[in-house]
Amino acid sequence: MSKTCRPPDFLIGFNKLAMPPRKSNTLTEAELRLMKILWRRGESAVTDLLEGLPEGEQLAYNSVLTTIRILEQKGYVEHRQEGRAFVYRPCVAEHEASSSEVRNVLNRFFGNSREKLVLSLLDDDGISADELDRLKVAIRGAAPDKENASQKSGKWKGGR
Image (tube, rainbow, N blue to C red; front, side):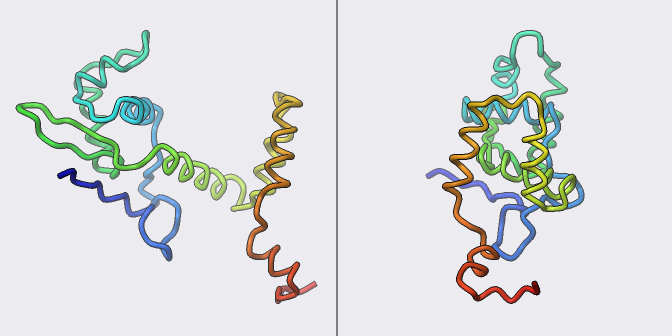
């Protein structure tokens, strides 16, 4: 029987903040590199993680071991023992981690304003016409948030 991971606290509970605690549960570049390997390969020992690193990005065994232990403390991975080795597996899905990171950026840099975030992306000279077209389609198809839905139904109590 497979044991399920306990998700990190910042992903539990409807009434809790959706953001990681101040201690920073966000992923460093080194942690993200290892998580990407785990998401791609599934369960992996430290030696498997070393083998999964891209060419030119090799790390020392102890560096990978230290990083994976930090990921375990943060709640992103858990391990089981297989012989003398620990085998690690992700406890947080890639989409959950990326959503958490976006919420973190949204909060820290844009004051939780999705509009400011999108406008910042649109200000980027590197955006292509195809990307703009896909964004337009996505925006048209997006469900309105609660405030907008309340305004349209006449139930909104905000002052204007």
